Image (cartoon, rainbow, N blue to C red; front, side, top):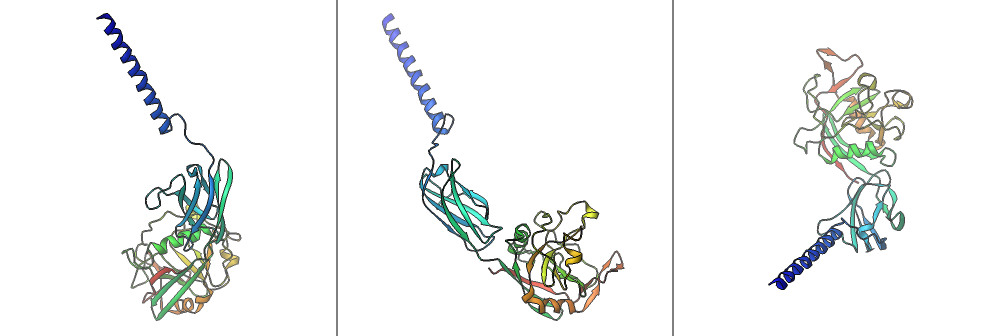
Amino acid sequence: MQQRSHARASVRSTGAAALSALLLAALCACGGGGGDTTPATVSAMSVLATKYGAPAQVTVTGTHLGNLSLNAPGCKNVTRLTTAPTASTDTTAYFSCTPSGAYTSTISGVTNGSTVGSTTLTVPPPIVTMAVSGGGVAGNIVFNLRGNQAPITVDNFLAYVNAGFYDNKDGKGATIFHRVIAGYIVQGGGYTVTNSGTLPAPKTTPFAPIPLETSGGSNLQWTAAMARQDETQVGTTTTATSQFFFNLKNNSGVLDPSTKTSGYAVFADVSSSASVIQAIAAAPCTAIVTNGVPSNDGSCVPVPNVVVTSATQTQ
């Protein structure tokens, strides 16, 4: 009897040791006790990109690619893909990123601080085509965007375009050109229709305001810039949202951030659309009334309204 008891105790001891070993192995497999740190190798890298501001896909083949990251200065929001059919493995890795700030840039694969592969991302300069009609005006305004100069401002504008904000694809009303100052500017992108000089409440914007960007160029004639609040009144330059304006003349001396504290960020050239913009400026216009008082700076709203009927990223 006593001998059999010793045998049972020995079995219990052996079983406990085996269980401990299994638990330790499980912890190691989950990363609790280490993992594969072997440097990645890359046999091929490629990128599929359609246009500026639209997600691009980077495909990498090689070994130990779980230890690979991407350095992509011209492509923001780099993300490793993990869902079929682009689920990354140790031999084929997929990444997405969004071209921004450059039209040609290098994407590099990095492992343990060393570059092990690269590919070139190339996209054409972005273009937005905005169709307008009403008030005797009909035509297209073409924005040749300066994404390589003013990426924050351009990315913001494209976000509004592609969300359907300007032309009622969001179902919340098409925007109008709501402010004209003769010989100075034409402004739009913030209000829906009105039949008088009294503007409705501005359309609710779905994106956060962006900071003032000073690298887009000067407010020369036939450029587009972002409207925003004067920071001397609100205490910040981070107020630009959806509204933009066209310079009807050379306003660099009064509207550039380098020459005026409350300057405005240029983000596009619209010179090929000068005739359409001139037609908006010449349309019948009613003085803007705020709290029952007409504007004292010559601001007026075209009535009948000039409405954005479509806004599309065409390149």
